[in-house]
Length: 387
Image 1 (cartoon, one colour):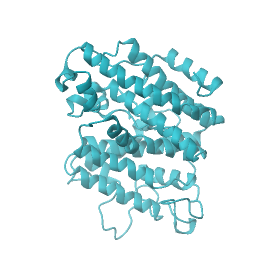
Image 2 (tube, rainbow, N blue to C red):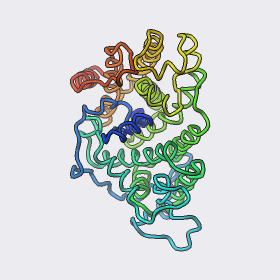
Image 3 (tube, helix red, strand yellow):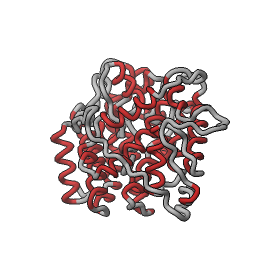
Image 4 (tube, rainbow, N blue to C red):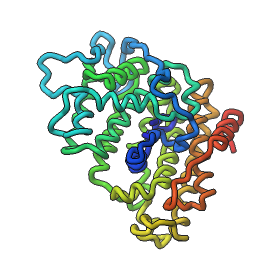
């Protein structure tokens, strides 16, 4: 999609897998959100003082931008960060994130936790391709990441009533789309991106729905069921990224969905152990039975032959989706082409790393090298999506 981060997207690159983020935090290391860059170390790091690229507060586009699109300019406004709306019936919306990181029923008074999410969006590893983008587009992608990361954290780590918190996020989205965005830097930046790019509401709501599903669904019986989850958790960000670049078409959205789903599946393959420890098994149950793998086998120190065969099978599925979706690169030009090529390259390099590790994802998490990712990106930029 958090490690940061979409398909064409910083998402789906929705990203950093939940379990892997928890492990990274416990070790005091950064983890990026964006799936394709599971090559977390390949991008380098901007550091706290790195340039963010401030988004212009463009006025909302007038007219209807599709179902759920921004409201007309006359009704839209961006509330300066730190300002409180008088007579608001709900607690300050931007405190929802702080509530998730402290106590769901006792929100803290400052915005430290919210600033922390934005700081991670600023300093975590972005794919190299994203660092080559114009600052305004990079800022819009960071705004998408900040929202997706917040929703991910609410669904995975919030104390208290997670469904209520996710419902509150949905209500906050409603405020953006009625022209009265919530206070707080994260929502202010998101509103700026929504208005400037004319992004529809539905993909954001799908990300929230993925968080709700995580509260009740911890197993997936078939690959089709897993893909339906990816349609909520990964594909929406890819579509939003296409919107940021202004290149969305039905066919590009279809190809983007394939890329996002592939990247999500590859990340699930990488993070089998962390997910299993968290009580979640994303690999389809029918495939575990097919290869004779018990859930307890996913927590062993090393992968058995059966586990390796299972992971290799899922990687092959992901690569098939990625190769079909990679045709998206050839339809794009300029910054959009560079960004999407970077995402696809990260996915291909990740698949190679998994294969080179013999699909043993239990002893260690296979990560692609910078050189491999750069080589894949170069080929994609020259040849489009062709191998």
